[in-house]
Length: 447
Image (cartoon, rainbow, N blue to C red):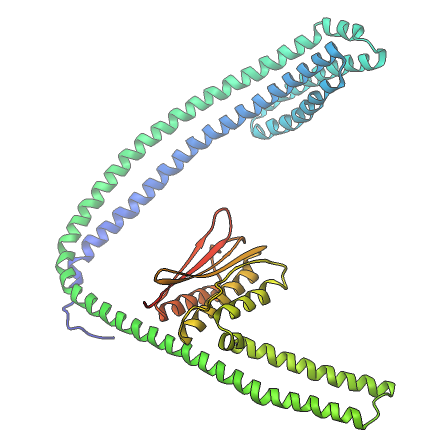
């Protein structure tokens, strides 16, 4: 550890106020937590009462809808009026179950709910009886006589009265819970203000002692910041150098594979072709094995080509950045059925070798991440020159940026940003509405 020669602050000037402040903070936290629990309890009571009122209203609406649908059917004998009736009965069953659930810890209310269920059942039976009479007799006369007995009206009135009584009790509970919540809020404000005042006083006391030490530590912090900046610059230069060396080694390895291994494989294929003219390979077993050898050699040539393209794309060196980007995008998107939109310039932009390979690697890493993680169905790749800069855009319609990127993804994004910085470019990665991710690279161009 580096010693900057700065006098240390004596801890005896701070530990006593700090200890008192810690005790006060802990006490305040405990007190505030108790107040929060009381407030939450009051708010929970309000929410519970509002939920019960909602369920009671659903029960009342379901009964009313069923009765209105039944009356419409009796007046018109149109079966279409019975669709709301059936829906209301289904809603009524689920609403009664939900009502029982909200009162499961109150035996007194459960007994009232049982009475409501019994009355509702009678009302539904009365309505179903009138509907069945219409279906059986083909007229509404007998059904109307059933309605005129007044039994349905008594059942409906009894249900409404019970529901209204329960709603009135819940409204009273809601009012009491709201009053309790407001009282808890008033107490919380007083407690919070008092605790804040005590803490401010203790902090001011401690600040008198700490301020003297801040100036002594400033010089150490500045020196440390200077060293961190220096180390960061060195690491950035080292990372840039390693990336450059890696690309050079990849190019050399790709060249050696192409020259040496490619020559060997081509020589083997030529020798095999000569052998095929000199020996008899028409025998079934010999022909099978001979074809297997030829297929293996062909597979080796294909493997060599894929490895070389992964190490150093030959199109980038031979045809330029535009052709390499088009080939790479098609190689990654076509196997997965991803629709690719290309907007590439006809004229090759004038870039040095470092900028070209950096732009290609950034586009390659972006496309690989998109294919692996975004679950996109469309990708747009653009490369065009604007006044004073080169613009590369890769946009997909996938799931967007991950909330918690994996280590591999995070390292890939860091590598892309470092590549952009190494050539003086700006890399922007952002979400796109309604879904998708856009990666944009801006490279200033020399006049």
